[in-house]
Length: 434
Ligand SMILES: *Cc1c(COP(=O)(O)O)cnc(C)c1O
Image (cartoon, rainbow, N blue to C red; front, top):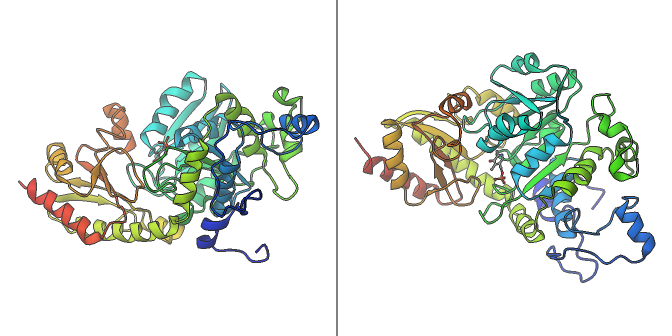
């Protein structure tokens, strides 16, 4: 198998796994155990001090989680990955791993509501400040970066504006300044978008969404592109002795690890932030995410095609003010989506309903197949009102900044028959007609 470069549909079933060496089990076993028996004293010492990779305690490593980590790394072309308890934990750890109090981040202002709060309210309390910029002009990133900036953060398909950034241009600006580009690839998924092919250095995911795909579990992933030089002087945590691990130097140990390459970032985030903050993924959830991954490409092909049909339908609808979906030729992000997301710009779209907030409320409550809830990426179609739910904690000014509008409705298109979905949309228009 190693001689052939396997394709996505094969990797999503096989990467990172050999049938269980103990039993031959074909499915990935759920290693629902807190801890692992050491063979002897020597091994206990070697694993505990990370002289050797192995399993000791499930907060830090677990064989079920490891298959998921290796599979995601293979699908995105990264050097390694880390599974954590939620997408929010993944985002927070991805930043904490490379910032200290007094340092800064530059992020696109079009962010998931939780990430918006993390950057504007929570991280500043710990001394890490974020400047939010309008990503429509890439040079805004360059203008916002200063000597203290340690990362640039964007989403693959912004939320709730459904915008696409010029990844290569943003990556170039980050690298000109000796800092990494972190991409939240939740809406992109490894199938539609491979961030490292376009210069990103770290990707994070809410596995809760498309990776799980069935709305059963909360989880997150961090993937290391293995393509950033952490020894460039801006990240002394990587190049000075680590007092938490008997003084070894991360970059010396993991900067060019035999067979894996540059895994310094992903090892450090495991050894510092997963170990000390402890938001580990349950092995049972890792198992469910692996089940989801097996069909990721098939679900997305269907979901993208249906989202496109629905976007076109809405664009031609007399009761609709505007539609935001980068697959539409009328979208300002159409060209960027063609370049970066050739398999389709996801299955999430927003539109403005004529009649404003009042009509939006009645429309959402009238839907029968679409479920009104705060999630995306399920196989089931979902509808939400961003201004009330996903971005409801933001002030009015912050909502305006993030692109949240009162008449805005968001669909996450599932795998149902698209004719049924179009019927549901039309009956909701008719039941709330003016
Ligand atoms: C849901 C989501 C998150 C947060 O993930 P959780 O698993 O809910 O913690 C982060 N980013 C994006 C784009 C999301 O959709």
